[in-house]
Image (tube, rainbow, N blue to C red; front, side, top):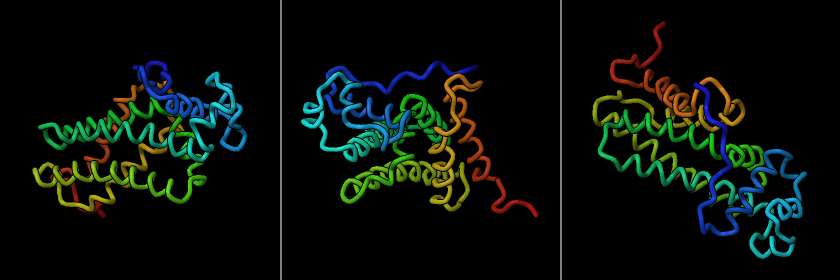
Length: 209
């Protein structure tokens, strides 16, 4: 079943102007590149004057950091809800997989812009970005450790498994197509299934020789 067309990243009613500016910047960075997009281009995209843009946003670097927060901050909140639910860890991991691909479907411009241009974020802003990503990774690690404690997953290198999961999901923006044959949720569950087949109870600790 093909995925529905990808909607623009949502801007909630009453959301501040900075979120709207970040959404427009994400689209322009993804389509044209960071260096090729000017603050004047971003101002035109949201129907504002250049002076008004600088009232809300200090620089393109600040915008790039905000773009990261727009998609990672929201997914952390959703993943926290999944982790807080009274459900087996394996079920929660499948829900997390669906969430991550659904998020990519909605925030693909944000992900393309950030992963392509993240080297431009420096100093304190980079530290904030790194801290937010660690929040997300800790939540995934917690679900895997819960699975080990419940007995559904064997003892394994949890940190390495998280890195493998992130490797699959974080670069999905390079190949994911909204009109593909699988929905985001189906892709997310398939990825988690691949991971769990390697670490589920009864799976070999090392591949057979």
